[in-house]
Length: 509
Length: 112
Image (tube, rainbow over all chains, first blue to last red; front, side):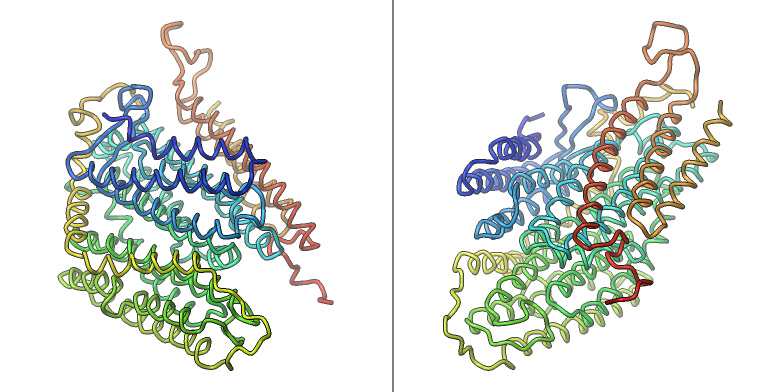
């Protein structure tokens, strides 16, 4: 047990609190603190990935022994998500520090609280604690979404807040059912008790599992629950939207964690099979709808929002195939799609600032300064996103499709993914050619300056996609081990509880 | 007591869902509040309904389960904060958008 494990939660909390108390400090100082805190999180993420290579790491909060106290668990999946969130946040905060953090107050404080919630959700091993961290990250995200003000943000914010409040209520209902049936909320302990539950309780447990899927489905944007997303993501400011790219992945993470650990211990007839049955068609439909949305989007930000939906759909569909090798490939795709979705939100802002008219609307043909630099960035990002070689999009999708080929329903995944990819390619080429080829050369009097720091931030983020392709072998190895770990929940239970199934008969139902 | 709690839960949930499906932000906020009341009550009753039993082990022969009380306290605090936030947000939206429809515009009103 090492105290380093609690730092990904404590550091952003302290930084956020400091920034809130000293909100009169100059914006430069606020930026320094925020960037410093986020950089420490990146270092901690690297440590976590290294530490998770071995066994599970657990941390008992207040030294209360599980299942009575809250426990933090670091395994390969949470370590990888911690590193991804921290890296993405670093780029977002760097980009925001070039000016968009001045559009409203408390940007950096809210940003740190959001990171605290995200990191906590990745680390916790307790379902109620997961709810609390979800609320922390949601409350921060409500305020971040509205950051900068304006009518569009208020409109989008209202939908976003109301649907998420409803989600929180459903989350509590599911937790209530689980607690009422098992008398515990510790994930490992729950897994043991659910596996040993009497047949009378099966229906209620199934109900709780499906309720939890609805809650995580709202976060991860599954088909009937995703209509808040395009408006919310396209209304928020660029760095906020880029950070939100990880939010749907938090939902996906929770889904994987809960379905595979909590409801997956029973080897003979696991409850998660029932949920997968629902998840599979809905996720495929999400993927299809995302592709149609990408094709029909009117602005680059909306298109990026639908790209997020598409990647969410593909992730959930491949997860619903319920095989370790497929999950490994979809985790690789998760890394790639999160980075690239963030790139597109930032690119929309970067290009929009250089256009004479129309910001990021696709229907407007306006002269553009710095056509070559921006065009190259857009081309590389689009090639990677659409899954063409040589970038990470190609590697991850190819690996995913290859691993899925032994599954009985693989044709559905292949067909919809490939057609969706074609749609995406068409939409991105249309956007690119309309913006970079069509317009007249820029003849305005003052040439707008292109901010080199912003360009550098976006380029490095795109570079990560290239690096993922270049060092694909070690990443794939890591992902395979991660998926293997997730499909052996008994090891998780043993690591958290010491010995499996020792705590029985504490509560008579 | 079971019947009373069950009836209260049912009525609160029904009213909450009905109000959430309305088109004005005020009724939606009210609906969310009722729904969160129902959820809190539900969470509380998941520790089993006992009367005359304190939530401390060892004082009397039977004791109530203290954990749902702690959970419900957390849930109340969170839902309280969220309600405050959504009230302020809907006021802000009503002022900025000049109407209190949840979509920000009233589809039935004549557009200027």
